Length: 354
Image 1 (cartoon, helix red, strand yellow):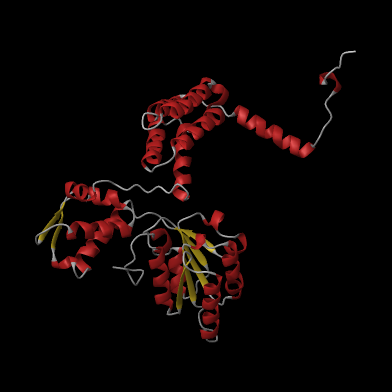
Image 2 (image 1 turned 90 degrees about the horizontal axis):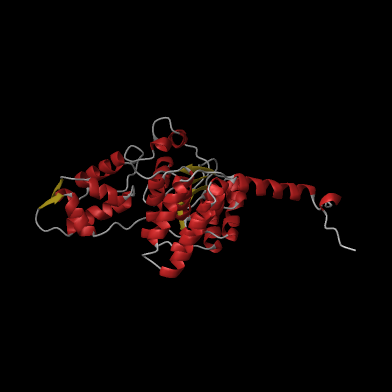
Protein backbone atom coordinates (compact mmCIF):
# COMPACT_ATOMS: atom_id res chain seq x y z
CA UNK A 1 0.00 0.00 0.00
CA UNK A 2 2.97 2.35 0.07
CA UNK A 3 2.51 4.92 -2.74
CA UNK A 4 5.26 5.44 -5.30
CA UNK A 5 4.22 8.84 -6.67
CA UNK A 6 3.00 12.15 -5.30
CA UNK A 7 -0.34 11.66 -7.06
CA UNK A 8 -0.99 8.60 -4.86
CA UNK A 9 0.45 10.20 -1.72
CA UNK A 10 -2.24 10.97 0.86
CA UNK A 11 -2.14 14.01 3.13
CA UNK A 12 0.37 16.83 3.68
CA UNK A 13 -1.15 19.03 0.96
CA UNK A 14 0.58 22.05 2.49
CA UNK A 15 3.89 20.46 1.44
CA UNK A 16 3.15 18.38 -1.67
CA UNK A 17 -0.07 19.84 -3.03
CA UNK A 18 -0.13 21.86 -6.25
CA UNK A 19 2.22 24.83 -5.87
CA UNK A 20 3.51 23.71 -2.44
CA UNK A 21 7.20 24.00 -1.59
CA UNK A 22 8.21 20.34 -1.68
CA UNK A 23 6.18 19.71 -4.82
CA UNK A 24 7.99 22.51 -6.62
CA UNK A 25 11.35 21.25 -5.40
CA UNK A 26 10.68 17.68 -6.54
CA UNK A 27 9.27 18.73 -9.91
CA UNK A 28 12.35 20.87 -10.55
CA UNK A 29 14.61 17.83 -9.99
CA UNK A 30 16.77 19.63 -7.42
CA UNK A 31 16.22 19.26 -3.70
CA UNK A 32 18.20 20.53 -0.75
CA UNK A 33 18.71 18.74 2.55
CA UNK A 34 15.72 18.83 4.87
CA UNK A 35 14.22 17.24 7.97
CA UNK A 36 10.64 15.96 8.13
CA UNK A 37 9.13 16.47 11.58
CA UNK A 38 5.80 14.89 12.45
CA UNK A 39 3.98 12.20 14.44
CA UNK A 40 4.24 8.50 13.51
CA UNK A 41 2.35 7.17 10.52
CA UNK A 42 1.95 10.38 8.52
CA UNK A 43 4.21 9.49 5.58
CA UNK A 44 7.74 10.69 6.36
CA UNK A 45 9.53 7.59 5.06
CA UNK A 46 7.15 7.26 2.11
CA UNK A 47 7.76 10.86 1.06
CA UNK A 48 11.53 10.34 1.12
CA UNK A 49 11.20 7.21 -1.05
CA UNK A 50 8.93 8.99 -3.53
CA UNK A 51 11.52 11.75 -3.88
CA UNK A 52 14.29 9.23 -4.59
CA UNK A 53 12.10 7.40 -7.12
CA UNK A 54 11.11 10.63 -8.86
CA UNK A 55 14.69 11.89 -9.12
CA UNK A 56 16.05 8.44 -10.07
CA UNK A 57 18.96 8.86 -7.70
CA UNK A 58 20.63 6.33 -5.36
CA UNK A 59 18.78 6.10 -2.06
CA UNK A 60 20.60 5.08 1.13
CA UNK A 61 18.77 4.40 4.36
CA UNK A 62 20.05 4.41 7.91
CA UNK A 63 18.17 3.95 11.15
CA UNK A 64 19.47 6.05 14.01
CA UNK A 65 18.39 3.27 16.38
CA UNK A 66 20.80 0.68 14.94
CA UNK A 67 23.49 2.67 13.08
CA UNK A 68 26.70 4.19 14.43
CA UNK A 69 29.35 6.62 13.18
CA UNK A 70 31.05 3.79 11.26
CA UNK A 71 27.85 3.04 9.34
CA UNK A 72 27.39 6.72 8.49
CA UNK A 73 30.92 7.02 7.14
CA UNK A 74 30.58 3.84 5.07
CA UNK A 75 27.40 5.12 3.42
CA UNK A 76 28.97 8.51 2.72
CA UNK A 77 32.01 6.83 1.14
CA UNK A 78 29.76 4.65 -1.05
CA UNK A 79 27.83 7.72 -2.13
CA UNK A 80 31.03 9.60 -2.93
CA UNK A 81 32.58 6.79 -4.97
CA UNK A 82 29.37 5.93 -6.82
CA UNK A 83 28.47 9.43 -7.91
CA UNK A 84 29.08 10.52 -11.50
CA UNK A 85 30.07 14.03 -12.60
CA UNK A 86 27.14 16.49 -12.53
CA UNK A 87 24.71 13.79 -11.40
CA UNK A 88 22.15 14.46 -8.69
CA UNK A 89 23.50 13.86 -5.19
CA UNK A 90 22.43 10.54 -3.67
CA UNK A 91 19.80 10.79 -0.95
CA UNK A 92 20.70 9.66 2.54
CA UNK A 93 17.53 9.03 4.51
CA UNK A 94 17.97 8.78 8.28
CA UNK A 95 14.94 7.62 10.23
CA UNK A 96 14.62 8.78 13.86
CA UNK A 97 17.48 11.22 13.33
CA UNK A 98 16.86 12.72 16.77
CA UNK A 99 18.32 9.51 18.25
CA UNK A 100 21.73 10.18 16.69
CA UNK A 101 24.33 11.32 19.20
CA UNK A 102 26.27 14.56 18.72
CA UNK A 103 29.28 12.69 17.28
CA UNK A 104 27.05 10.81 14.83
CA UNK A 105 25.44 14.05 13.69
CA UNK A 106 28.88 15.70 13.43
CA UNK A 107 29.97 12.95 11.02
CA UNK A 108 27.29 14.12 8.57
CA UNK A 109 28.32 17.77 8.40
CA UNK A 110 31.10 17.59 5.79
CA UNK A 111 29.13 15.39 3.36
CA UNK A 112 26.02 17.55 3.60
CA UNK A 113 28.03 20.78 3.26
CA UNK A 114 29.88 19.57 0.13
CA UNK A 115 26.80 18.01 -1.46
CA UNK A 116 28.17 14.47 -1.35
CA UNK A 117 24.72 13.44 -0.13
CA UNK A 118 21.38 15.15 0.20
CA UNK A 119 20.22 14.50 3.73
CA UNK A 120 16.57 13.71 4.39
CA UNK A 121 15.92 13.15 8.07
CA UNK A 122 12.74 12.01 9.76
CA UNK A 123 11.90 12.68 13.39
CA UNK A 124 8.95 12.61 15.75
CA UNK A 125 10.71 15.07 18.10
CA UNK A 126 11.31 18.80 17.75
CA UNK A 127 14.53 19.14 15.70
CA UNK A 128 15.36 22.42 17.44
CA UNK A 129 16.00 20.45 20.63
CA UNK A 130 17.34 17.18 19.23
CA UNK A 131 19.47 18.10 16.17
CA UNK A 132 22.78 19.95 16.57
CA UNK A 133 22.76 23.55 15.39
CA UNK A 134 25.43 23.20 12.63
CA UNK A 135 23.43 20.39 10.99
CA UNK A 136 20.13 22.20 11.51
CA UNK A 137 21.51 25.29 9.77
CA UNK A 138 22.23 23.17 6.67
CA UNK A 139 18.68 21.76 6.50
CA UNK A 140 15.17 23.07 6.10
CA UNK A 141 12.59 21.71 8.53
CA UNK A 142 9.16 20.74 7.20
CA UNK A 143 6.33 19.89 9.60
CA UNK A 144 4.00 17.00 8.73
CA UNK A 145 0.54 16.88 10.29
CA UNK A 146 -1.64 14.02 11.46
CA UNK A 147 -3.91 12.80 8.67
CA UNK A 148 -7.35 14.37 8.54
CA UNK A 149 -10.66 12.52 8.26
CA UNK A 150 -10.83 12.91 4.46
CA UNK A 151 -7.27 11.55 4.12
CA UNK A 152 -8.03 8.50 6.27
CA UNK A 153 -11.23 7.73 4.37
CA UNK A 154 -9.33 7.92 1.08
CA UNK A 155 -6.70 5.56 2.49
CA UNK A 156 -9.40 3.10 3.57
CA UNK A 157 -10.93 3.16 0.09
CA UNK A 158 -7.54 2.55 -1.52
CA UNK A 159 -6.82 -0.37 0.79
CA UNK A 160 -10.18 -2.01 0.09
CA UNK A 161 -9.90 -1.62 -3.69
CA UNK A 162 -6.19 -2.14 -4.33
CA UNK A 163 -4.88 -4.56 -1.70
CA UNK A 164 -4.62 -8.07 -3.18
CA UNK A 165 -6.08 -9.81 -0.12
CA UNK A 166 -8.67 -7.26 0.96
CA UNK A 167 -10.35 -6.83 -2.42
CA UNK A 168 -11.15 -10.56 -2.45
CA UNK A 169 -13.39 -10.08 0.62
CA UNK A 170 -16.79 -8.40 0.72
CA UNK A 171 -15.94 -5.57 3.13
CA UNK A 172 -18.60 -2.97 3.87
CA UNK A 173 -17.82 0.27 5.69
CA UNK A 174 -21.16 0.79 7.39
CA UNK A 175 -19.69 3.08 10.07
CA UNK A 176 -16.25 4.70 10.18
CA UNK A 177 -16.34 6.86 13.31
CA UNK A 178 -14.59 4.39 15.63
CA UNK A 179 -11.92 3.20 13.20
CA UNK A 180 -10.98 6.80 12.38
CA UNK A 181 -10.96 7.81 16.03
CA UNK A 182 -8.83 4.86 17.10
CA UNK A 183 -6.29 5.51 14.34
CA UNK A 184 -5.59 8.99 15.71
CA UNK A 185 -4.51 10.37 12.32
CA UNK A 186 -1.92 7.59 11.90
CA UNK A 187 -2.10 5.84 8.51
CA UNK A 188 -0.09 2.83 9.68
CA UNK A 189 -2.35 2.33 12.68
CA UNK A 190 -5.45 2.66 10.50
CA UNK A 191 -4.29 -0.09 8.15
CA UNK A 192 -3.28 -2.30 11.08
CA UNK A 193 -6.73 -1.90 12.64
CA UNK A 194 -8.40 -2.71 9.32
CA UNK A 195 -6.27 -5.84 8.95
CA UNK A 196 -7.02 -6.94 12.51
CA UNK A 197 -10.78 -6.55 12.04
CA UNK A 198 -10.85 -8.38 8.71
CA UNK A 199 -8.67 -11.27 9.90
CA UNK A 200 -10.67 -11.73 13.10
CA UNK A 201 -14.04 -11.83 11.32
CA UNK A 202 -15.27 -15.11 9.84
CA UNK A 203 -17.24 -15.33 6.62
CA UNK A 204 -17.00 -13.65 3.25
CA UNK A 205 -18.90 -10.53 4.34
CA UNK A 206 -17.21 -8.17 6.77
CA UNK A 207 -19.46 -5.32 7.89
CA UNK A 208 -17.36 -2.74 9.73
CA UNK A 209 -19.35 -0.89 12.39
CA UNK A 210 -18.32 1.21 15.38
CA UNK A 211 -19.45 -1.56 17.74
CA UNK A 212 -17.34 -4.15 15.92
CA UNK A 213 -14.23 -1.97 16.02
CA UNK A 214 -14.66 -1.22 19.73
CA UNK A 215 -15.23 -4.90 20.49
CA UNK A 216 -12.09 -5.98 18.63
CA UNK A 217 -9.80 -3.30 20.05
CA UNK A 218 -11.27 -3.20 23.57
CA UNK A 219 -9.62 0.13 24.34
CA UNK A 220 -7.98 3.04 22.61
CA UNK A 221 -4.22 3.04 23.28
CA UNK A 222 -3.66 6.76 23.73
CA UNK A 223 -0.63 8.42 22.21
CA UNK A 224 1.40 9.76 25.11
CA UNK A 225 5.17 9.54 25.41
CA UNK A 226 6.26 10.62 28.87
CA UNK A 227 9.75 11.47 27.60
CA UNK A 228 8.87 12.75 24.15
CA UNK A 229 7.33 15.63 22.26
CA UNK A 230 3.74 14.58 23.01
CA UNK A 231 4.47 14.92 26.73
CA UNK A 232 5.46 18.57 26.37
CA UNK A 233 2.66 19.38 23.93
CA UNK A 234 -0.04 18.06 26.27
CA UNK A 235 1.30 19.67 29.43
CA UNK A 236 1.56 22.93 27.47
CA UNK A 237 -2.07 22.58 26.37
CA UNK A 238 -3.04 21.86 29.99
CA UNK A 239 -1.35 24.96 31.39
CA UNK A 240 -2.60 27.20 28.58
CA UNK A 241 -6.15 25.98 29.16
CA UNK A 242 -5.90 27.01 32.82
CA UNK A 243 -4.37 30.33 31.76
CA UNK A 244 -7.14 30.81 29.21
CA UNK A 245 -9.85 30.20 31.86
CA UNK A 246 -11.22 27.08 30.14
CA UNK A 247 -11.93 24.48 32.86
CA UNK A 248 -13.35 21.88 30.46
CA UNK A 249 -10.23 21.96 28.27
CA UNK A 250 -7.97 21.86 31.34
CA UNK A 251 -9.76 18.74 32.65
CA UNK A 252 -9.58 17.11 29.21
CA UNK A 253 -5.80 17.57 28.91
CA UNK A 254 -5.34 16.41 32.49
CA UNK A 255 -7.38 13.30 31.67
CA UNK A 256 -5.13 12.67 28.64
CA UNK A 257 -2.10 12.70 30.93
CA UNK A 258 -3.78 10.46 33.50
CA UNK A 259 -4.86 7.88 30.91
CA UNK A 260 -1.38 8.03 29.37
CA UNK A 261 0.19 6.96 32.67
CA UNK A 262 1.68 10.29 33.78
CA UNK A 263 2.87 10.55 37.38
CA UNK A 264 0.07 12.41 39.29
CA UNK A 265 2.71 14.27 41.28
CA UNK A 266 4.08 15.76 38.07
CA UNK A 267 0.60 17.09 37.24
CA UNK A 268 0.18 18.39 40.79
CA UNK A 269 3.51 20.22 40.64
CA UNK A 270 2.45 21.96 37.44
CA UNK A 271 -0.83 22.96 39.09
CA UNK A 272 1.08 24.54 41.99
CA UNK A 273 3.33 26.39 39.54
CA UNK A 274 0.31 27.63 37.59
CA UNK A 275 -1.35 28.86 40.76
CA UNK A 276 1.68 31.03 41.54
CA UNK A 277 2.55 32.06 37.98
CA UNK A 278 -0.83 32.58 36.30
CA UNK A 279 -3.34 33.29 39.09
CA UNK A 280 -0.91 34.91 41.47
CA UNK A 281 -2.06 37.92 43.47
CA UNK A 282 -5.42 38.05 41.70
CA UNK A 283 -6.45 35.17 43.99
CA UNK A 284 -3.80 34.11 46.52
CA UNK A 285 -6.09 31.31 47.77
CA UNK A 286 -5.40 29.45 44.52
CA UNK A 287 -1.87 28.62 45.66
CA UNK A 288 -3.22 27.31 48.98
CA UNK A 289 -5.75 25.07 47.23
CA UNK A 290 -3.19 23.80 44.69
CA UNK A 291 -0.76 22.93 47.48
CA UNK A 292 -3.56 21.22 49.42
CA UNK A 293 -4.36 19.09 46.35
CA UNK A 294 -0.69 18.12 46.09
CA UNK A 295 -0.66 17.07 49.75
CA UNK A 296 -3.93 15.15 49.29
CA UNK A 297 -2.38 13.09 46.50
CA UNK A 298 0.58 12.27 48.75
CA UNK A 299 -1.78 11.20 51.56
CA UNK A 300 -4.61 9.34 49.82
CA UNK A 301 -2.84 8.15 46.65
CA UNK A 302 -4.34 7.29 43.30
CA UNK A 303 -6.96 7.05 41.81
CA UNK A 304 -8.87 8.91 44.55
CA UNK A 305 -6.34 11.74 44.32
CA UNK A 306 -7.77 12.69 40.93
CA UNK A 307 -10.76 14.30 42.69
CA UNK A 308 -8.96 17.01 44.75
CA UNK A 309 -6.62 17.53 41.79
CA UNK A 310 -9.59 18.12 39.46
CA UNK A 311 -11.10 20.46 42.06
CA UNK A 312 -7.91 22.51 42.12
CA UNK A 313 -7.71 22.61 38.31
CA UNK A 314 -11.28 23.86 37.93
CA UNK A 315 -10.70 26.45 40.68
CA UNK A 316 -7.56 27.74 38.97
CA UNK A 317 -9.14 27.85 35.53
CA UNK A 318 -12.13 29.86 36.79
CA UNK A 319 -10.05 32.23 38.94
CA UNK A 320 -9.00 35.74 37.85
CA UNK A 321 -5.45 35.86 36.53
CA UNK A 322 -2.44 38.01 37.41
CA UNK A 323 1.21 37.38 36.58
CA UNK A 324 2.47 40.56 38.28
CA UNK A 325 4.63 38.72 40.84
CA UNK A 326 6.08 36.47 38.11
CA UNK A 327 6.94 39.44 35.88
CA UNK A 328 8.19 41.45 38.87
CA UNK A 329 10.74 38.93 40.10
CA UNK A 330 11.98 38.30 36.56
CA UNK A 331 12.47 42.03 36.03
CA UNK A 332 14.33 42.30 39.35
CA UNK A 333 16.61 39.36 38.46
CA UNK A 334 17.36 40.91 35.08
CA UNK A 335 18.32 44.18 36.78
CA UNK A 336 20.59 42.38 39.26
CA UNK A 337 22.38 40.57 36.43
CA UNK A 338 22.79 43.83 34.55
CA UNK A 339 23.86 46.16 37.36
CA UNK A 340 25.83 43.72 39.54
CA UNK A 341 26.55 44.19 43.26
CA UNK A 342 25.20 47.68 43.97
CA UNK A 343 25.74 49.03 47.50
CA UNK A 344 22.76 49.17 49.85
CA UNK A 345 21.59 52.83 50.25
CA UNK A 346 22.39 54.26 53.66
CA UNK A 347 18.78 54.91 54.78
CA UNK A 348 17.85 51.24 54.50
CA UNK A 349 21.05 49.65 55.81
CA UNK A 350 21.13 47.74 59.07
CA UNK A 351 22.08 50.12 61.91
CA UNK A 352 24.12 48.37 64.60
CA UNK A 353 23.27 49.44 68.11
CA UNK A 354 26.03 51.03 70.18
